[in-house]
Image 1 (cartoon, rainbow, N blue to C red):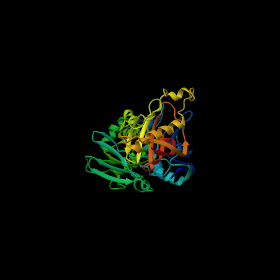
Image 2: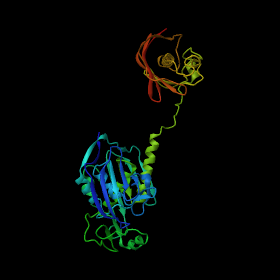
Image 3: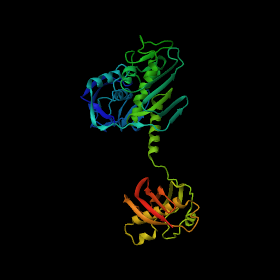
Image 4: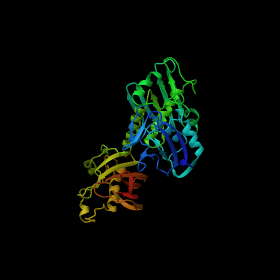
Length: 430
């Protein structure tokens, strides 16, 4: 099992914010196991904490903003991508302004600072968010899908109607140093034609050719690119940081087409909702009976109040039979057996197992003559949990040995999937 990690010592990084243009300093500090990543606005009274969680996202205008009341931190995605890429799980990040510093427009400055700080193993196992069922999100041309996988993998396609970008496609399995070596240095980008519009909206006040790739009408205005496909790599970086807001590391394959911060956040929320739904137990479905209570009366002579099997739901000749008993507060034995704290008598659970065993011995058609099964012995009997009104007993009998005049079976009674009683039962057939 992997362990959780935090940094070995404090580390800082300063610079201006991309959108606000404000000077900011980040101070990375070790955090306890199982605490996750939390930003602290140390420039505000009481240093309000803002958990890096998708439910705290309040804006996705060309970046991801998280908030706690009036306290917010803009453009957290590059920092979070560096944190998860550095193999860290728990971190307190102090910031003295309302936006993280941009650096060179990539995650590289944060990656380098965190690498210099080192990391330390913590006494807690790392819990992965494992995808077991596909989740799909679509909004117009944007598509995001996550599939089950053994590792975190991102496949991204972008498509811009521009001669300098066109269609770019890339896929990376994000294990080991892959993020640091292949993605962390990919810079954010924007189109020159968008600059005036974004500035009018109060954005990219800190943007320059030193911290972003600027795409002109026909070419890239920067001197060079770090990768031929730097744009799609940066989009993967953004998604990596945004999806970490789900609250941990994912094992799954994300396939993204034309996505951005807003759709990353909506997709992450949909994944979380899907996972929470999977944790909730489905409404119980009572199996269709193979034998009803009236059929059971043709096999065994028992009648109310001693008939303790309501139906048989599974039968494999000479191998196994499963039946059920719905325990209600109206059971006659509750009148005299702990009436103020009704608990089903253990001997009656064994009796119910014996009754369902009759189906295993004689089959659904019942005995062909007047033979009956009588108890000859009980071994290895254990009562593991109490059974109370409202429980549904699943009664299972499995053949150990079956002869013409004797039978030995293993009986187990379950409630909600847990064994409540079990015993080896021997019968003589007469």
